[in-house]
Every structure is written in structure tokens, then in C-alpha cells.
Length: 448
Image 1 (tube, helix red, strand yellow):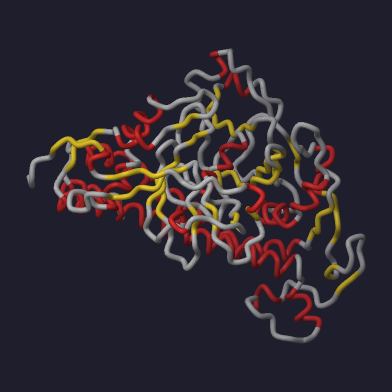
Image 2 (cartoon, helix red, strand yellow; image 1 turned 45 degrees about the vertical axis):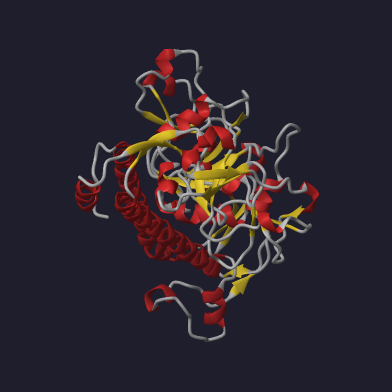
């Protein structure tokens, strides 16, 4: 069974230190090698940083050296702008990537004062325990914006196992987290590959240019090479490959929006099983596919949405607050009014339309109007010009990229299953209900 567990307060083991009030006008989105300012938006809801998915800012002013973070330092979110306080106390560790990171005042730095009693990696997972978050929310101040403080964090009490058992618990949770992270990194590579192929074929026209110059087509199989034309023609958007056309996106896909059934009508929501997407569902994605939605509606609720249930494969584009979240829906879903949804039942396949929207984002956002916030209407979106390659080229493109997206979906599904196991194990491990050896067996059966 190991050594007995004993109850402690975090303050017996650590200190939580405030950050430095960095001057806003000395921060810049243009990265030149200056120290990186760690902001709350850089945290994932599930813990860890997401610098590669969010705006990263650097600091170009003077600062006390003590507020420069070291690799492995743990930071905790101490301010949350959502009423539920979902990210209050969420941790992330400073990466060892050669960059300097600065400790902003809205988060707390964890300093272990009793390394003989507690491990850093164990603390990281402790901070993701729902009991910890719920206590911080309960003791927080503020209404629209919730705040916690070092003293409230340090007051949290919990049963502490031996150093040895802490290591075993952290190891179990790390195995699951590493597999999830591996899937995430693999998906980034797969999506980057799909994007590079689209740019090569349909933006830079590299296969056509190579064929016109009688050069070898790099990165294109012999069967795919046969479908490309060997020259160019004029068009309203400049020179394009022979036989291809320029059209309007509204003529090539069915462009629809959505709406929100009355939230005070229970028959539209209670017990609902139909997916209903909002831009928030896309905001939290780390991969370009939507497999689930936070909220669901009933058949009666669906009847309130004129666009109805959109089929699997619909390309979703957030049309406001902000414009530009993109995903391919892997579930049939209804949508709210914050979307331009593209049902790809015509000449252009959804994989093509998805990447086209990415490449055309500057044009899309330039057509936005609005005073309170930028929004692009369907009427403004439909006339945007889109290149329509001939059918054999599109068919070849789908054959190349479909396996990439199918693997992305498979990885997301596996990571979701592993996350479910992770979430189930964490409270049982930290309460002592489940021992690490028993948890290892469950992890093995989960495939991690």
C-alpha cells in the first residue's frame, strides 16, 4: 500500500508569486527575439500552453530579472473571464525552447519550498484536479471576471502521498498526456501537408508550371501528373491553368447560416440529442475537424432553424466574433447565427473548399461590416471568386488528401477516448481511491 497519506495545505509545500505589471504599449505581436509575454489566452483549458495556436506577444521594455521564467516553471491562471471559472487555477509549464518567457501579473508562479515532500510533476496534475478548480471558483472574487489570489491557492488542502507514490501517479498521467500530445503533433503535420499540397496545386500552380516547362513534377505521382494541363490561360483573376474556370463560391456550394432556438423554451433543449454548433465549439479545437458540440437541441428545436440539420462534411466558417474559425464537420449538425456554413454538394469537394477558405481569408475579412464587431454576411460572402479546377484534378486531389484527414479524425477520436480515461483516473488517483498499479492496467487497456 505504501506510506500513509496525510492531509496538507498547498501553502505547506509551495509559494505562489504574483507576476510583473508589464506595460501594454511595450508589447508587440511582431516577434523579433525579445522575451515572450505569457498571457492567459496562451493557456489551454485542459492545461499547458498553446503558443502555436494563439497570438504570441513579446516585450520590448525593461523588467526585473526575477520575472524571467525558467524552463519547467509552473504558472497558474488567477483571472478568468467566464462566469463558470473553467480555467481558474489551470497550470502550464514553461517550455525549454531557447526563448525567454516573462511572468505576467494575472497568473501565479509556483515555487516549491519543500522539494523533499512534493514533486513538481505531481503538482502539475494536482492543479488539474476538479476539486482544486471548484474550491478556487467558490472562494473567488468578482462576478463577470473571477479572481483568485496566492493565499487562496495556498489554502487548498488535500491528501499527500509519499514522494515515491507521487512519481508513480504522475507517470500514469504522463503516459496518457504524451500520447494525446503525440496525436496533436501528428495532426499538425498532417494538416500542414494537406495545406502545402493545396498551395502547390491550386495557388502556385507548380505541377502545371513544371509540366509547361517540361520539368519533373516534384511531389506529384505519375498518375496524378497526367491530369494536369501543360499551360495557362487568362482569367478575371489572372493567369490560371488551361481548362480551369473562375466562379463565385455561392454558385459552387450551398451557403447557409443558422439561428438559436429560444433558450427559455425547454422543449427546444431538454434531452436534446442533435448537435448544435456555435463558434465557441470551433474556438476550442486544436484540429480542423468538429466531432462534437457543447450543446444539443431537440427535434422541436431543430424545427426553429431554417437551414436544418447540415450533413457530415459541411465546411463551417465563423462569420463574427471573430471571423475565421474553420472546421470540417464530422457529425451532422445544426448551427447558430455565427456561421457561414458551406454544404459541398457541387463540383468542389469539402477538402478543397476548406483550404480555399483559409487561403481566401484576407478577402473574406475585407468584406466584413458591422459597428460593434466585424461580421461578414452571406450576401457579401457568396460573390467571392473561387478557382474551379477540372474534375480529374479535383478527384486526384481528394485521393491524395482524404487519407490525411481520415487519419486526423482517427487521431482525434483516439485522443478523446484517452482524455476520457485521463479525466476518470485523475480524481481517483488524487483521492487515493485508485492506486497507480491498478491505473496502469486501465491505461494499458485504453491503448496508451
